Amino acid sequence: MRTGTRTRHLLTLTAAVAALTLPAAVPAVAGTAADTPVLTTGAAGGTPVAVGDTLTASLASGTSATFHSSATGTSGVSCTSSQFTVKVTDNPTAPGTATETLTAHTFDSGSCTSNVTGVLGVNGITVQNLPYTTTVSSDGTVAVTPPSGTTVRTTVALRTLLGSINCVYEAPGLTGTASNTGNSIAFADQHFTKVSGSGLCFANGYFTATYAPVTDGSQTVYVN
Image 1 (cartoon, rainbow, N blue to C red):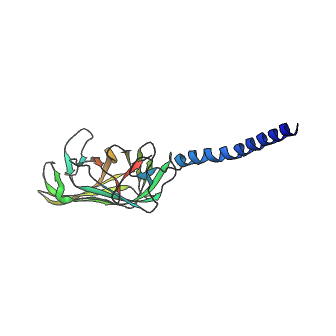
Image 2 (image 1 turned 45 degrees about the horizontal axis):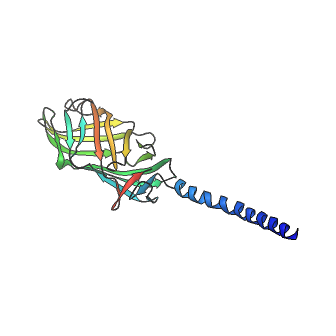
Image 3 (image 1 turned 180 degrees about the vertical axis):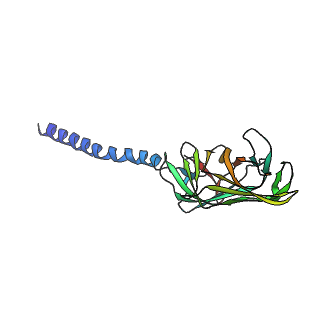
């Protein structure tokens, strides 16, 4: 009887220890995956991008940023060199939405051309009302939002037969798509409306561009 009692006590103690130990181990494994943030470097599920890091991207190799007068047309302005810079302000656990501040979006005027009748060249493209808020969601949705009470505003400066003119365009915001294929962010036919400029300025502008790869220093950025 004593031997049986000791055995039962030992089995009970062993079961209690197992009950306390196993639950502690399971969440540890699950927690590791759950702690993956929206933005990582090196690979999907890789090293977390730190809040405060600066991310940059230029146009994908062999592509151009275009600003056409219609969504289906080819008349307008085209640039082969453009870059954006953002600062990460929040990078929560995935699935979720990371937040960034767009501090710069530039176009190299020397790389820009125009095929608009009467336009001899492009003096520059300036993005105004910066900084913008940019969000990147786990599903790949990218949104660019200007400060409250303002717009996404761009001035296109052109050389024409009648001298230099400024064409000013505005949009309430931009929507793009992030992809881990090529670590890219793409914008397609984002609609701007002319708010000032001569008759040589087309009434509407449609912005299309793909930026890749998006990098954090020397590391490519992935969306989780």
